[in-house]
Image 1: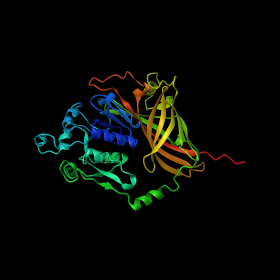
Image 2: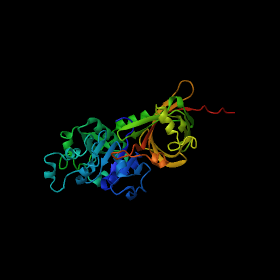
Image 3: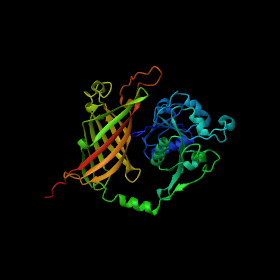
Length: 396
């Protein structure tokens, strides 16, 4: 899995709600769905990183967290015949399910569930504790709750472990389902264990020293477009992805002596480049970007939250086609270099997920003969920026 995956939670019961709160607290973008429709999902107390959506849209995501009852898993899997390329996270247990031994026929519950998702990599996680324990919010100085991940696909297990880290947990990978993964099947050794990873003095020392000399200094930092990039990808025909970039953009970061940094950026949407001139011309057309009427997309920051030592979420007002939405943009600060004689240079990597339907892009997208849209609704945008510090004004 390359780039920033699109996450989705399916289920609005106890585990689904707790995980949605985690995504919200740590500003990790995710879709959230159930079988009753997005209008039944209450996100009024959550951040903009959690987006209610339809079940079919959620199932288009790259990583799908199943937070539904065990007996409903197979019905959900039957909604598609091929789940290739997806990671399915199984949070369910067959414990206390009537006739579970007859249902499983000697298989582990996740092995049984995996049969319903042909082609997918299935990972067991978020299941070893009771919901009230998983929901506990623990001050950082008291450590992080340990969660486990097990899968027959090591890359998928690592990807889910990375998600666990982003959500503020301390993940441990257990290997294959029939090996270490057995330990988190119901009734086994690691189930209902309250385990925490405590910070060590060495880790505290490393964290304290690693930031030395890496901070931004007050002033204006101008984005260097020659050494920066803005790229995007969108699912095509439900099986592939179209990727592209914007070649013309500008912006700046203003850091006051005291207070929150402010960030502005402008993207010339007519500079879109997907490597296909005919397709690029269509993207400039009125039903997509409408470049003649709306030549620029703009980004203006309104708030910022820290999620780790060098990881942040920027709350932005993003405008495209004259429509403005408030969205979370997750980014990492990569440090400051002395540069090449033209001023200090700061580096950033960021990612944001947009829904094209929110901005009136291709609202009449045709459906494929087998069902599903020709073009996915979610668009993954990644930014890699270098910003140059403007020289201080001379004193008189």
